[in-house]
Length: 372
Ligand SMILES: *Cc1c(COP(=O)(O)O)cnc(C)c1O
Image (tube, rainbow, N blue to C red; front, side, top):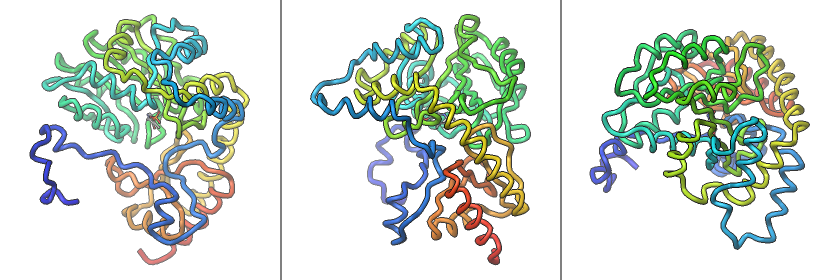
């Protein structure tokens, strides 16, 4: 559909008419249907290639007998499990239909036209969408070595700023902020500016001075930490995540939350996943080993990549990534071009199973040998 034949565009709120939607990784089924191919692999959405653990799967399956009932709208058991996991009061927990939902709740509760949110160049694409969807203004700070430049972010904060979004680590760059730097940044914020620290990849990070921002909630009433079950827990299909904040912030987020935003099986599987440390450990180990294989393989192809602490790596192809991506798709390999993040020559690759990563490297090598 083109803009000119869009019948309803001029009826939409102006900030919605100007909004660019999120572009998700193509599902395997869609690519195969389009190209008439089989055996494709998806390394495009930072999913856990091992899937979820057995405990979460069993908890999910146990819900089948009673699908006629609405979920617990207050997510009592899940919020208690999350609170216990972080050693916090359940009143600090807001559950979401994925952590994306929590980011939207923050925007709906705290941003409106005339107000601003601040984030970094190359930051997660949901921040501008959540901001623009409520008619607020996005302010983008230049990145430094592909990562967040906290001084540049601080320089954009003014009396209209209500939210600063910080992804730690960031997607799609995999860059991260140290405890000292991030804490000092939050400490310097005015109280009217909430800081959302998005820790979607928290468990994957093994750097010693990488912070758990949830430990700072007592110190900073304007801090919101988000986590998800979609990444290391392998529950992306179920859509469940959460925010941790001051209880008064959580109370406001809960005012705009849909009462049944997390389904019965999602609540049950998430509770089980939280106590399945074995699966988390296995997933982290797999990621560490395979990240080493992929990055060594990329270097072997003569390619540079942005050092990443997540479960993905963004490689510099040294030429427009769109054509390379198309060629990879025709070979059944789905990665994520990140031109929409201001990185037109880069391709983001999710760490997959060993055989998937080997195939990615082989296919990428073959595609790059062809004349551009
Ligand atoms: C994947 C991701 C999320 C989580 O999304 P869900 O809605 O929980 O699936 C949040 N933030 C970042 C930076 C991500 O990459």
